[in-house]
Each structure stands twice: as C-alpha cells, then as structure tokens.
Amino acid sequence: MPGPKDLDPASSPRALIGSELRHARERNGFSQAQLGEPLFLSGSFIGQLEAGTRRMQHEYAVQFDVMLRTDGFFTRNCDTSAKSRYPEHFEEAAEAEAVTTAIRNYNPLLIPGLLQTPAYAAELFRTYRPMVSDAEVEELVAIRMERARLLDDPTKPLLMTVIDEAALRRPVGGPAAMSETLRHVADLMRRRRIIAQVLPFTAGAHAGLGGALKLMEFPDGPPLCFLEGLDTGKLVDDPATVARHALTFTLLQTTALSPAHSLDLIETVAQDYEHEKARS
Image (tube, rainbow, N blue to C red; front, side, top):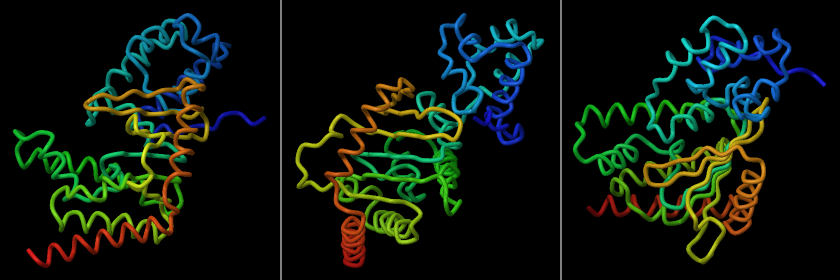
C-alpha cells in the first residue's frame, strides 16, 4: 500500500505543521495510534492532523514538542497560525473545506455560502450584525467570496448540494439580489460544476428537518461532518456519526427533485424575481 502523500508545506500553515508532524513521528518510531494515546487522541485524529484536515490545538502542540523532541516547533507554529478570519465555531470547518475533495451540503434556510453572490451575502451580514459598519460588511463579504473561489477549479472539489425550496422563496436582499443569486446557481449547474437538487415544500416531513449538514471527504484522511446552528457549529469525525449523517444526505437526495427538475424550478423562481424587479 502506498504511503501518505507529502503535503506542500507552502500551501498553508496546517500543511506545514501536518507534514512536519508526520516526519517527526516517523523519525521517532511512533505509529499514529502510539503518538495519540498519551493525549487520548485516536490514531485517525493524528492522521487528520498530518493530512491537514484538522487544526493543531495548543495543548497538543506542547505535548508533541516534548514527545518528538522538536524544540518548540509545533508550539511556535501552532500559535502563529491560530488566528482565523472566520467565526470560532466555523474556523476549523472552513480550513477543512479548503482541502476537501468532495462536499455534500444541505441547507434548510439559505443558499449555501459557497454559492452566494456578494449582494446576497452582504444582506445576510447586515441582518446578522446590524451595528457593523459598511466597511466591515465589505470585509466579511470579501472573505466569503474568497471561500467561494474553491469552485474556480473546473473539476474539484465535487460539490453536491440539496437546497430547500424555502431558500429559493425567501427574498434575501430583494428581487435583484435573489435573481442574481439563483442565476449564479443555475449557471454553475449548467456548467456541470455542481450537482444541485431542490427539496420542494411538497416533500413534507423529511430527514433533514433537524438542521444544516455538511459532509467533507479528503484524499488522505477519513470524512468529516459539520453540523451548524445559530452561532454554533461542531466538526464531527466519529465514523458512526458521519455514516449516519451520510445516510441523512442520501435520504434527502432521494426526496428532492431531480437535478434537471431542480434547475427548471431555480430558473423559474429567478424569472419571477426578475419580473417583480421590473414591476417595482
């Protein structure tokens, strides 16, 4: 079986730390399970750190420096890379998202962040944080649009999304912003850059009523699941839990409209918004 791929240390701080952790572990003769055991970490979690899909926490870095005799390397670099532009509950998920090979996402209320346009995102940020300045809103939007550049690559990651019909009908930012956003989603679908399905109101009760769900896969690590609520989020790596939520997403796909019928509905609703804009 081939060994794990070397990460490009220049690609991100986590890639640097992960690559050095693997080399230091192997140099000292530890397996992943042996390195994790004193810290009550699983071998798979160590593998995720080495693959760059999980962030190194300060307390782990301190212990690794002692166990691997790395003269403070992990502590220094962990602390330097700890700052994030994302909310605390989302920062680790955003970093994992940047190196994923496949994303499966369900959102019951909004157009997913990776598919939003600047006008749509700006309206959300102004609503969430009514006291922030226009400059701060612009910065938040820029960060979100930078995340969306993940889709600039024509082939990866694979993005499959189920969008609730409520997200299409809720006029975030007004008719102009909504028509632009839905046309953007439709364009990504027509270019076969994403696979999107709409979960219609007529579906009634369904497997995703509990909230938003994001599943992520990686080339050199086990899959992760991100569960998000109001200013809260949890990145889950327990295999049984991830498998259960993967089944949830599959059930949502079987309940949703086909991609072709979803595209028809998205473009029809976009056209409705355009007519509404023209009448105003």
